[in-house]
Amino acid sequence: MLGSVSPIEIERKFNLIHVHEWTGNTVTAICKEYGVSRKTYYKWKNRYDNSGIDGLHDMSRVPHTIKYKVDTATEETILDLRLKRFGCNRIRFRLKRLGVYLSSRTICKILKRHCLNILRCKIKNRKYRRFAIKHPNDMVQMDILGPFYIHHQSSARNYIITCIVDDCSRKVASKCSERKRSIDVLDVLEEWITVG
Image (cartoon, rainbow, N blue to C red):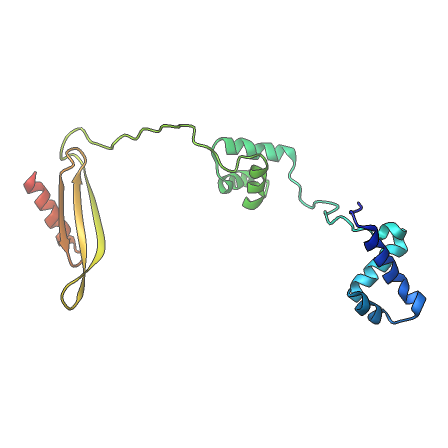
């Protein structure tokens, strides 16, 4: 495969190869004069000796053969699994069960080629339902937040907030303490029970 090279560039390469024969200068001196390395000189000389003037054109850098090419059946399996909303790692795991070993990167490249690397959400206006229990005091949510650092006059103290919320009535009870202790959590539960 020949690249596009200007005739001036081909003439320059031709002259570089033949200056050694015409003048008798050393290859090192010629390479220094033309501003190329000895390796480049010998590469062009070997190409000229093998292919003539066509060897001085830039050659394609595309690999002649691809060592590991994914066959169409495997590619279709990857696309089918992606349409089932599987990610690259899960597809790789499923293919491994079938005896096909591909990296996640290769699977991602295949999905990009088919524009399936990002799946769009089918629901445009998604409506969220609030999680709620039908009867009060059936279920509560508990959370321990912190530490929060509050600066007093001379020292900084950290505080932990324990919070309880009823899933039906949204009744809240909370307490601030200096450490995470089970007794503080039990105090908040007692307060929540007595208030409600």
